[in-house]
Length: 381
Image 1 (cartoon, helix red, strand yellow):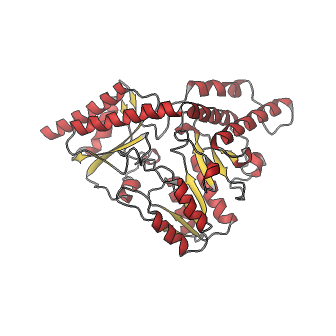
Image 2 (cartoon, helix red, strand yellow):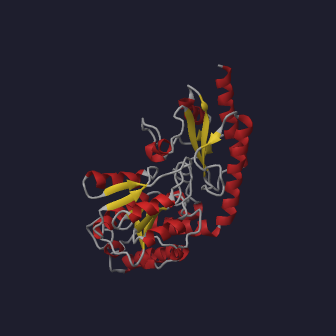
Image 3 (tube, helix red, strand yellow):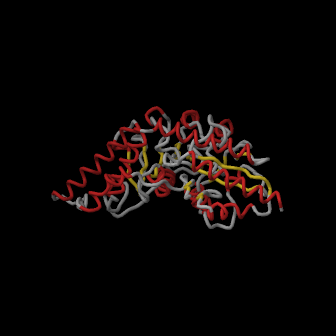
């Protein structure tokens, strides 16, 4: 059996999305910047996609800008906001995605900003009181805190965080890559100036995403060389990627409640299976708490063993794809900065399982069984 449980890294493309993209791969090939009929037809499709995304997020089309994905969007929003508003102080957490963390660290290293880290509790939750303190004792700040952590699934209260940032006139950016398409975002009700999305996290194509920039937030472009995206991103648009992004988000919103119930059921089943079959198993962060965790992510903390580093290999041999941390760190020799940030026991194994609408109960039971077998064999050594 082949079981894919690494959906936080990327999701399978929805066939309906592929069908929507196909005409723009084969027939509608005009450059959207061209003024002839071939170009105008494609331009119209891009603007229709922009309108779809904007309507779903409850914002205006002029606030949506298409990018190559979440990393580009994060870099653009961070660097351009700090530069355009001449900010010298930024706040983030030590468990952000590297697209945010490394960008801010580079700005600090090059002397452009002073960087502060908000405190986290033992589960990895952001201390909003400390955020308030940091904002109060520093000049106007740029705040970047992700909506849901890609490794442990902890969810940030965007409304409460935005209100604190508004009180101190801070610019609030949130990486919403892991929650986009899995939760309904009504950005018109939030005090957040900019967010990011990546299509391949919600069954769209890789290499396509978007950023939302509040109409009252004016920033300079990050990529120069053309007037595309209303002068905000130079370069010929990834037309079929944009079409696929809008279609994938449309499907996600259409089927959200059904898929959330299905996926939460799979996650609950794996939690129960592992608790019943492995003594001493626990879960990192809030990943076993449905009130505070992204329902697509489960980060399992396994018993101490000298062979824990063989678990992912053993799962792979048995046809099960999972992750030892963020996919962006796969192949790295160092451990997860997220798990280090919440001070988990480095001697205990950690595996992130992440689920999608395509996973089944049978797959969850098979994966749980193989993990249990691994630790039973360890106990016999």
